[in-house]
Length: 364
Ligand SMILES: [Zn+2]
Ligand SMILES: [Zn+2]
Image (tube, rainbow, N blue to C red):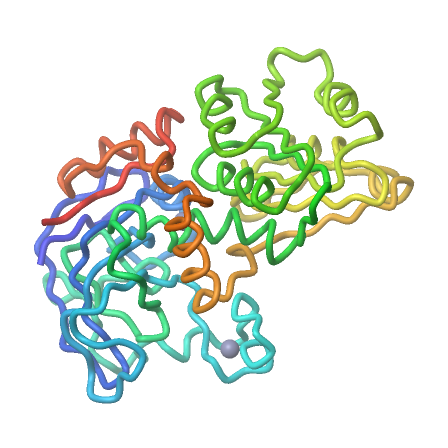
């Protein structure tokens, strides 16, 4: 099958023919219909995170189940599915407690080193990013990496439920648990940040302040429910502007969705007394943020990371699909354009320049 393969860090993806193995008892082959271009894969293309190469990127996938292994019970041929990149064993204490993002043994659902690889190229194992590897005509994954969805959902919209939506909306719903009337600010309004914005709006936040350096993203943020937009380039002091908007020392919840030390610092600055700062943006390994103890201590502020929106995919993906069908969750304006697999490098070039919310590769 054709796939976009990363062969070297810092180089464009190559469209290659790769071999797909047969499904093992709990594995499933899915014909990919749509595969979103997520910012974290762009980081992976340009930064050495230690992934074994060659590697198939793409982890926001929707498609149709083609065939299943003998012991699969969760999906059947013909089902429409969204890939769930939160690999979890289902048996450790955190999984049993309903926190699969903290799973102690996500490797339990991968093939072992002595088993045949799921994907191979010229006899060499090809790694699947996020256990998905979705820039390909098909994916071969463990059934726990799939969630069935309503067939009425368009595939290019459904794909976004697999990462950008669960990460952004989930940070609001599952981690911060924003309540009606709370005040929220979001630094960084790309594909994930826009979902933090709409999660806060759906939760009934009284202020949803969108912060970004790109005017086009701020305008988009308004359509996702931002009540105010702020461009830090136009402000003498970002925190003063946020305090002016909310009429007190800062917001109840600030979300950092950029992944830089200075934006983490800004996010804690705009958090009010007793408030919470959530780091959602993916940072380079080893990155620090220059905070003093006083920044947090005197304001009784909390600082937390949120991985994948603390999502339980089996619950959250169908919920967000329902909200979309009710017209309450906006997926339509997240899809900036649909492209072919051959255009994947152009799509990433646009994403790198901050020109698009989401390009989605679609397959016939
Ligand atoms: Zn992603
Ligand atoms: Zn587990």
